[in-house]
Image (cartoon, rainbow, N blue to C red):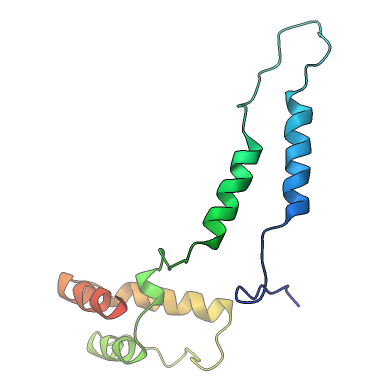
Length: 128
C-alpha cells in the first residue's frame, strides 16, 4: 500500500529534514585541506536559513491547481458526446474501474477528440 498524504491534517514541513540540510550546507562550506591537482568546483552558497523561512511562508499560503492536462479533464458527457460525434469506439474502456493502463487509454482517446479550434475552446471553457 502506498503512503498517503492528507493535506488537510498533515504538515509536510519537516524541521528535522531542514536541520539536516543546514548541517550539510555548513559542512560543505567548510574549508578543506589543499589537495594536489586542479581545485574542485565550488557550488553556489545557499542561505539555508532564508530558504527555511521562505518554505514556511509559502507552505502556509493557500494553493490552487496550476497544472491540468486538458485530455484528463473532460466532463464525462462531453467525452461521450465527442467520441460519438467522431465515431471513436470507447466500448473497450471500463470507466468504473480505472487503473493506470485504462487512464492512458482514456488519454489516447482524448487526444483524438480535440481536432479543431471550436472543440478545444469548448473543452477548455468547460474545464475552467
